[in-house]
Length: 393
Image 1 (cartoon, rainbow, N blue to C red):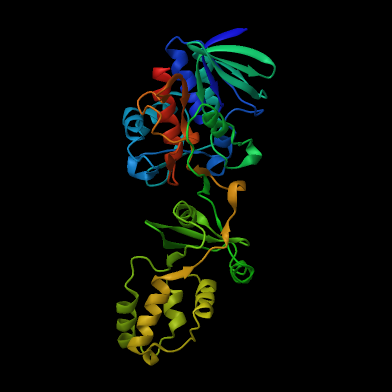
Image 2 (cartoon, rainbow, N blue to C red):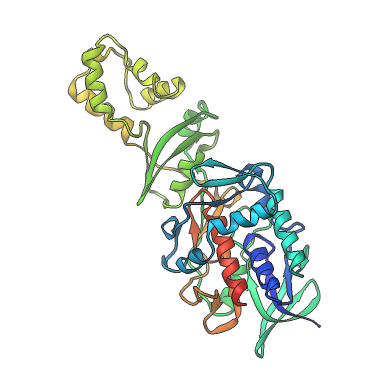
């Protein structure tokens, strides 16, 4: 039987970060993953360029039934700490949006960096090897992986959530948590595009590929981000963010002209250019195809501004600033970037990530009930939770 101080299940962002941190502390570490490549989700993220952190990371950017749980780890390992690691490896990066850092070349650079650090830290990484059994054994743990029996001082579960099963995502981590008596909150696909009814699919399909800067509201979430029309429904950062707040049957609201007082502007334009057509005024700000669609959806006829009554202007303002639709659903796990929900954190130490009643067992990363907003926050959670656990395990 092979013996290790630490066995990490999962060769993703959190797992590799934990392993290299523990390895540098002198621990004998083994990483095991059923996938044939390490960091598969890293490789596909950010369009293949990996939005590896967000400089503005703060606890307010995360969802959890225990909102205070993430504070400790996020404070102890910051975005600047990860940027320093990236720079030490000579990886070039760009800031695509305020605070959002991406690889200038390829996400492969981040995976290569993590694997190099694991090698330097003496970590053994074993791929294409499913874990069949995990059990407590005295003061340690025992595993069976690919027919091999392994003894470990501690086991770290870094198996991620259910998002994108084609990359190998499974519910293994949740099943393991339940086996050891831990509760798992309900899970749902998050940061995922919305689907629409067949009628709206036909309507929106004519706009497929068109993007527009909007403000999207759903529940207690409000985001000013681009919206993207697709042949299946509505996507883009704005809709992905809203999906984390959405529940079946709820409406999503879109402000097509964020930052603009439509009623005041229309009333002023009615005086300044009374002969101007409504479509001409809208075309200044919105794509022409979208203007035509909005006028059709809301039952407006193109007309001179002079003919608009105050009530017309009020109706136009409501339609443009608070357009609502009810999604038929989401695209689900197939395209979801993350999993909302997971292993309840009340039974986990926010300092070490150990199970309070079973200190030989740890849970980190996406498998926990901690989910970030879009923009690099989920990767920062993976790095921070991985480091915190690696320093303690």
